[in-house]
Structure formats: C-alpha cells, structure tokens
Image (tube, rainbow, N blue to C red):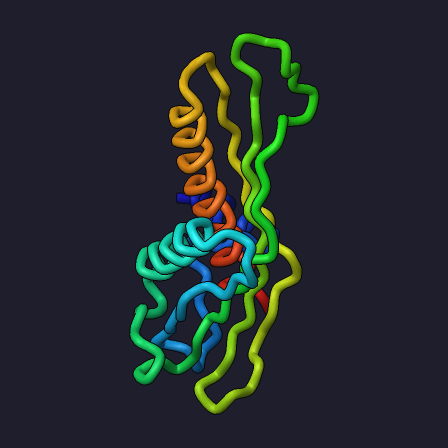
Amino acid sequence: MRIFLLIFVLFSGCAYTMGYGHFPDQIKKLAVPPVTEDGVDIDAAALLGGAIRRAVTRHPSADLVSVPKADARLQITLLDVSGSLAPMADPGLRAAQYRARVTMKAVLIHRDGRTLWRTSRIIGQADYLSVPDDIEALEGRHKTALKEASDSAAEQLMTALVYQR
C-alpha cells in the first residue's frame, strides 16, 4: 500500500494527469463546418475535415453537432498541401521515400461570435514510397499518405485544444 501511495504522490507532484484533457468548460457541443481552402486542394480539405470530425467524436468531453446546435464551432483553414522527397531520400533508389504534408490553422469561435482560441500552424505529415509502378498507383499512395497526414494534424489539433490554458 505504501508503494502505491508513494507512486501517487510522485506523479501528482510532477503534474502528470490520468485520463483525457477536457474542452473549455463552456463547450459541450462542438461543430466542425467544412474546411476553408482557397484553391489549395479540395480533396485534401475533405480528408482533413473528416479527420478532425473523427477526432472530435473520439473525444469524450464534447459532442459533434451541426452549427445551429453547437456551443462553438471549430473553423479550419487549409493553408498548404505538399508532397516531396523526404529529407535524405535518394530519388535514384528503386523505392524513393516521399513525404506528404498538410498545413492548417484553426479558430474556436463561440456561438456569440467571440474568438475563444486559435492555433498557429499545425503540420501533419506522413511518408510513402514510390515503387516502380503505374502513375495511378503512386497517386493512390500519395492520397493515402494525405489521409494519414490529415489524421496526424487532427490529433495535434485536439491535443492543443484540450490542453490549452
């Protein structure tokens, strides 16, 4: 019993917490309208919006609802989408490594129009390989990597949102 008490005291003294962080107190219902993208990539915007909605639904402290029913909305802007050789990758190799990146920012807006919180740039990324194959296969690997990069950006956003103070 003493060991458990000692472990509890050590963890509480180091500011570790157990369980999920929580959304700001006034937000129990959250809306995620379509991602804004000014001609960047409409497919990536849809992937990012879906990833963020899935991340919100996985979080136990708020419900995903439509904008009229929401306490706040999470306005997402897609800033950039890119795919290039990964750092230190050799394009002469049979399967060169590429990296897909999704860059976004977000603003949390209360239903009365007040800005509650905003992020700086969030960059999600995922690697993929270009093996000798049809261009369609490479494009498919790139789209899969964009989905993974969107999932990464969504998780970073949720972490930033629930632990912001």
